[in-house]
Length: 469
Image (cartoon, rainbow, N blue to C red; front, side, top):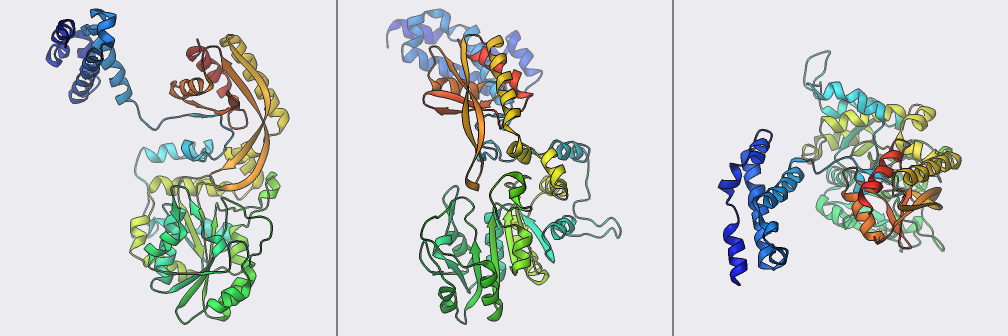
């Protein structure tokens, strides 16, 4: 190593020396010494690496002063002290964006929870008797009201619901499923794998695109426990296809003393056609048509926190509640609170449309989006005149495996900054304190106004002013 590099390395201050500085003394009044010390060590290690790679040596000794090390350490400390899960602006046009936490909770739900989160809540105790109860009993009446089922419960997600239902009702026995419904959901979780973990035995019938009632009938044996229908909520098979209706499956299952399990996937509680979306089977229809157990997500079309809802006949739900996996998959108080308060909105479709961000985004008319897009363009021109902004047509989607093929007409503002590629501009938008996520098309960053709010408009313009040269 050249002498100049060795000199630079020797001149670097030690952690002990840095801890005595006035700047670090201020940090220590707000942050633990262990965290501050670790950031100083990492900052010194980074500067040493720069010297070894000759980057710092080319810039001279100013790059390796104590002030430079402290500046780097301060940045590291700020990053370490901030929550990693933080508020973001979703300008992607995907309403339920898995990477961005899926549903935005209704403001009325969040506001109603704040006082309760500051203290104790009656999560697992009956107020009348003072006796212990199961936490899901508090939410069961709403599930019964909205689905028409005899009983209901909730676990941590719908994959967990599938695992629990099969383990409780069909372990060591056969469950018949159409080959066209052996789905794979996000993260490479496949239904056959979940079924294997439940110790139920999968029996595949039919073909990928066509399954007939006789296929189910011929597959029934003395070891069969249930017939299972899995709704393809995250894909569609079109063309020369055929699937057996739920009513026919119910009649066959019950004539042979079998259970009918209906995995509804995204989980519609209301007819989505009133919101301009295509038809999706509802939980109530499933129960009324003859499903003994129906299960679906709580964080997709319901738009609550992550959860898997299970409703059905009381006898089946009782067995599910008593299974050892129930405790492993149970939800915490925040999930129960969010789900209960969100479910109440489904009593009134107009209230749901007005108060629930998911349904408000879906139903916002194009003329309102046009005004929002115009406002965003004007704000960008005022705050960041060097950024070129234009309005263009766009397509939004519900997302997260819900109504996968239905595009919702939308508008977006395309933004371009001289000297920045679309990839770099999108990166800077994400890394800004406001954390703005758009999408890239044709070397342009698009900001879809269906998934942003009017309050986001000036914020986005200010971000572009900060990040674009």
